[in-house]
Structures are given as structure tokens and as C-alpha cells.
Amino acid sequence: MALLITNECISCDACVAVCPNQAIAQGSSVYVVDPELCTECVGAEDEPQCRTVCPVECIIDDPDRRESRDALQAKYQRLHS
Image (tube, rainbow, N blue to C red; front, side, top):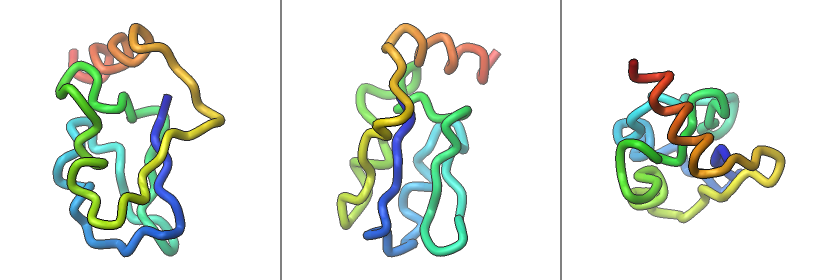
């Protein structure tokens, strides 16, 4: 599952630097997560690092993009091989 950044985002940049897949970029008004790159940090960390640094807690599970842990791990391995 990819993560989703809500409109509560204050564009502080904190999430960008901690993403191991470079899946977060500035959108038109808030940051956005590229679902093709987001693995929820599976393969790199124990939990999504963007959530741990977000000061306004605006990063949620994207209900339209559900993936199993195995699928996220496989995606991470494809991205980093």
C-alpha cells in the first residue's frame, strides 16, 4: 500500500529526506507520494519514516492502493537491485 499525504501538509520538507525510495515530491499545494515508489519503508526500516518525522501527522494509508507486506518487499528489492 502506498501512503497518502493529506491537505493538512504544511510543506515542511521533513518527509522528503527520510524516504529511502525518493517517493515523496512537492505537489501543486502539498507533498505527494508516488505509489510506484512507496514501499512504506518495508525493506529499509521497521516503520514508515515519513510518518515518524511529520510534525502534523498528515500521512495516512492510501485506501486505493493496498499491497501486502510481501508485495512491498518485492517492490523495494526491484527498486534497489
